[in-house]
Amino acid sequence: MLVLVILTNLLTMYIFAGPSSFNLHPISKYTQHLSLPLWEPPSALLHELNATQRELTRSRSEIEELTQQLKFTNLIVKALATDLPRLQNSVSANQITSNSSILDHINGLSREIKLAIGPHKLPLGYSPRMGSDELFPPVGGACLKYKDELAQYMAYTIGAECPVDDVFAQQLMLKGCEPLPRRRCHPKAPAKYVNPTPLPGSLWATPPDTSIVWDPYTCKNYKCLIDRKNKPGYYDCKDCFDLQGREKARWLFDKGLDYGVDQVLSTKPRGTIRIGLDIGGGTGTFAARMKERNVTIITTSMNLDGPFNSFISSRGLLSMHLSISQRLPFFENTLDIVHSMHVLSNWIPDMVLEFTLYDIYRVLRPGGLLWLDHFFCLGHQLNTTYVPMLNRAGFKRLRWNAGLKLDRGADKNEWYFSALLEKPMS
Image (cartoon, rainbow, N blue to C red):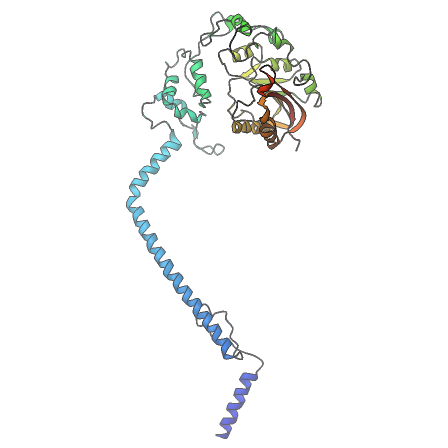
């Protein structure tokens, strides 16, 4: 007995006074990394066990919540499985709408419209470059809003003469149906057409009346268009068909709001302004003036009761029949100069104008010029709307002139400003 008592005491002393401690075996996943030294007081051990118990209780609650969510998910899956046939039909209809032709399933449209605007399978199959096996002709999204007008525009005899519907077609364009669908018919040709005047004489010569079809216009000859400047009422670009009048002197002199082309070109190294765009360029006089200086300018214009595009082309210049709202059809960082006189003004909604300025910035090369020529606005708009807008677009100011427009009286607080702006080099 004495030996047993001594051995027991020695073992107890070894356990409590030994240099090492040992761990409990894990009783759960929460105690797997929990070290419980046996030399800690009982209160510490109790605290650890209580914490473990709380963790186990919280885990049970989470398991119960997940079980309930799983039951709810199972119910949704069953409901979806029951409704799957209807959903498949709906998805198929949406695919037809977005991938085939948005108009294919709209009743009453002709086969010609579907052929003109619908997708067409590529003969060689899927093209990795295009990311598709179909070719989609570009058509303005707003065309889809005007079903009756679109049907009327596409009503013609294939291979025959197109209807003379220039005014109607342009109205569709101005409603946002731009570009229009292509048509398989021939436009009416001018009667007794003659060859144009050779360059450079064509730049300042009035073309013959037989150079265009007059059907869409109020005037039926160029004399009528030239005489408009003497008639009352408003006409778009009222005097610009008279090439021997004010047009003859435009952009030759540099004073105040009127910038001269030579002074503008001198802001850049000689010969580096080579190609550009004139937005809403009337009859193309700005392009003619620049062509005399070996600069190629494309002029955009609409035929608002006048053959503006035909007149520009007759002068030996390039024209594009585009509205102000269309994305400019040029790649980014390509043009040396963009000019606009009067067209970019406060009649354009602010947001449309801001998108246009950013689009101009896009197509201009670094160091390219934006020439805003006689931008019209009201006095309160100048510093509150347009100066901040131009700053946001990111242009650098090279020249700036502003002045009151006095023809209707100073009390109207109407202003013009002209500006020569530059796209930064970097």
